[in-house]
Image 1 (tube, rainbow, N blue to C red):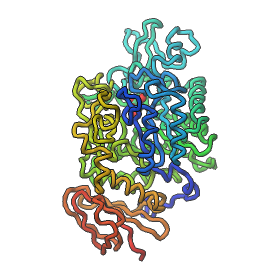
Image 2: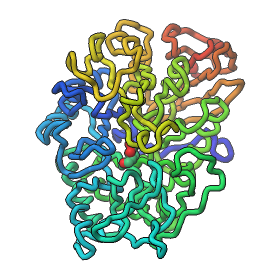
Image 3: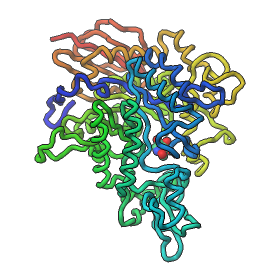
Image 4: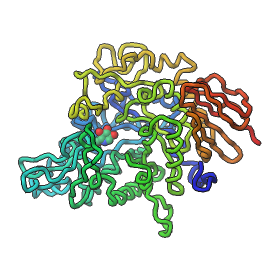
Length: 552
Ligand code: NOJ
């Protein structure tokens, strides 16, 4: 990959060898939707335990489980009422311990989702905080007087629409919530809040979890003067959240100090990973690696999150030129020694197969698993699951309920995992109503169906994961010569004398690319492996090719 003058990026290899989160592939499980073990239509921890062999067989390395803590479920677990327990819907702490042991027995890692920005309004801390203005926990949350005319303190907006301020009648003040009114934001300027949250993290670290995915890490701190956000001149309707620019409510400089504190807590446990959920443009995103200024002489010099999640593949239009440009800009922006990562889907985004279509979903699989950096997969994407169709009476997501019909709903991408060709796809027992409907043509996408087809998307993912696992070049090699030509995205991965070329045809027509002679390691059609190629490659429409170049 070209940085500045076009030389290859030399990555410091010293840390690379043994670090699991660099070498591995992360798989996100949304626990409500993965596997139900007790026939209530909602997935649970014992369900995940029962499916660990599938995950190990797939070839992923780490399982990130979205929140399973006690919660009123206003935002399906992202409204935590107790940071050190398990909601009965998902099981018990003993189930968690078994799951963790099962994951470790299989040589996998467990990444827990942690929700530091806000609690549930039913969390004892908030109940205390709202009990009176003089309660010792009053300052654990963000309370403000009304404006002189009795209206909200400023124009800060909730991500789920409407003002971010809710009036509390009993104590005569407003409290702030970045999301639902049932999710009051904690005051991270308060050292007591920090200490309490770090204790909660220790609880899980002591149990042996291997890291955290930190929810909305870039939102933790808000302007201490509570200044109104600038009005967004480009706003043309849609989610009212976008009617203002989040100048004073997101990515505040003081957030970096908290990220460093979290990181140093994790580091005190050894080999644990801090992943940040951060939706920001690349230059702002990469600051979350926490690079210390070179002149400070601090070592190690990256003191922030090891992996600020990179969602730009989700946000970039599926065009070769734009993705080539994205890869180049991202690689060039990484601070020295920072490890890249790539994400194609999660529980907040339209499904990959629905965004770019089934044919390109195969190309995207090759992209995700051959780029430099840790890939994160979303459950069901390995099957090509599309978005489910959600009838109005089936809507669950508060984001949709708050602002219906403008595309805010996240239910479609959260529908149950498709396992077997039987009622409820093996997700739950016969006769049980699943919490969200299955995708309508689900038998096409089950693990059982795809297992019988040697060229299924699942077969492609398994092959890719095996290839990556056995290739030092794909895991640790540099990436260079990132280019787009006539709808084909190409790049080269190099490690010592080995050179792997990747060509991704993002069009549905035949394309030719010029390259060095080599042997096909993989075609996304899974039919030309081992084929020897001369200097030209012909790519079928929607084909991705991974080619091992012959040594010169
Ligand atoms: C980000 C999570 O990914 C999303 O699902 C949730 O609604 C918000 N944070 C609020 O916690």
